[in-house]
Image (cartoon, rainbow, N blue to C red):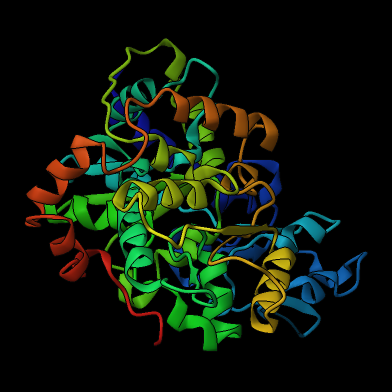
Length: 413
C-alpha cells in the first residue's frame, strides 16, 4: 500500500466532504466550521457544533463550567479559547450533543504527507487496552510507523522522570506537619484550577512540566526539526499544548478516538502488526493513567530515596472537577490530613477521560496489568531514566533537580 497516496487521499476527502455539506469525519460534525478544521489552534478545545440557539437544557453548559468559559452571544453559545481548559464537563451535560471536541487530525495529516518532516507520536500511559487487548505498545509503535510516523514514544517514560522530580521536591520541602505538596504533573485541569481560582496555593506546586510536555521537549531537543503529536484520552491536553510558556513542546494533540478513526480510514490494525517492543518505563510511570497513580509513584520513590525519612507521603486524591474543587477547599480550611494532594478532572483518572474507547474500570485493569508487567518499580531502578538524563546533560539526580530548566515551568505567571 502506498501510504503517502492513502494519506493524501484521506486529506483531500476530508476537505471535499467539508466543503460539500459542512460535515466532518462522522455524523457528530454537523455544521462543524471549516475554519476550525483548518486552524484548530485558534479555537477552544471544545467547540459548539451548531444548534445551540434551540437548546433543550437552557444554560446547563454555562452553569457547569467552573472556569466561566461559556457565554451566549446573539443567542448562540461562544466558548472562550483563553478560558476553556477542555475538562469536558459541558460536553457531558449537553443533552443535544452540540458540544464536541476540537479535532486536529487535518494538520497532522498535512505533516505526515510531507516526507521531509519527521513526525513522532507521544502516547499517553492510558493507552493500554484502548485499541484491543493485543494492541501492545510495540504493536502500536508498528502501527504509527506504518501510517508515516517516524516513531512512537511512551509518555510513561517521562512520567518516570517527573516522578523522580516530584519525589526530590517532596524530600526537600516537606519536613513537618502542615507542610504539603500539590502535584503538578498529573492533570492540566487541576493545575488550571489552582492557577486561576486558588492562586494562593501556587507556592505548593513544584515547578515541573507535565509528562506530555517533558516528552515533547526532549524529542525536540534530540531531533530539533521533529513534529510532535501527543495521543491520549483528554481534550484538556489540547489547551495545555498551546500555553505560551510551554508551546514549544507539542505541535498537535489527538485523542484515542481520533487515532482509531485514522487507523480505520487507512485500514491499519495494530493487532495484526509485529511487536516493536522497547522497555522504557517503570511501573511508577505506567500507573499515572488512573486515580492515585501519581501518589503511589511518588510515595514509592520517596521511600527509596530516603527509607529513614520520618515524614512519609500521606496522599489524598480527588477525581472529577467538582471533587477537585472540594478537596482544595478542604486543604485551605485545614479540614483534611495529608501532605501530597493529587487531582484528576476525570472520574477514575485518565482512564475515565472523555475520549477513551473502553469503560474506565476496564481501562484501569489494563493499566494496572501493564504497570505490573514493568521490569522496574520506580524511576530510581529504571536504567533508561539514568541513560536519558545523561543524554540531556545531567550528571546525577541532584544536578537534575537544580538545573532542569528543560522540565521546569513557572506557575506564578
